[in-house]
Length: 73
Image (tube, rainbow, N blue to C red):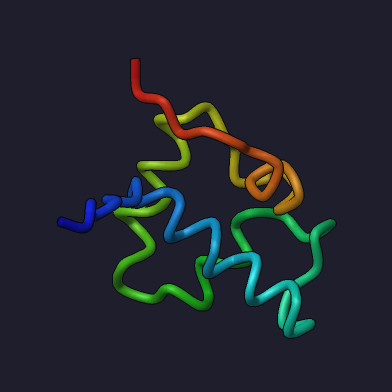
């Protein structure tokens, strides 16, 4: 029996943002708000998630990418 690993939604966002950085679409030094342009209608949800985790929209994307674990305790 294989065990299915369920990823935290923030891990998926983090991976998507990492992919955008690797594709040179955004830079690690860009502010987090810049990804709003890429998420369109979904941005309000992701913005609230980021704020709940203590990020500001002016924080550099590199801070989002540096998170190793998304604990909600």
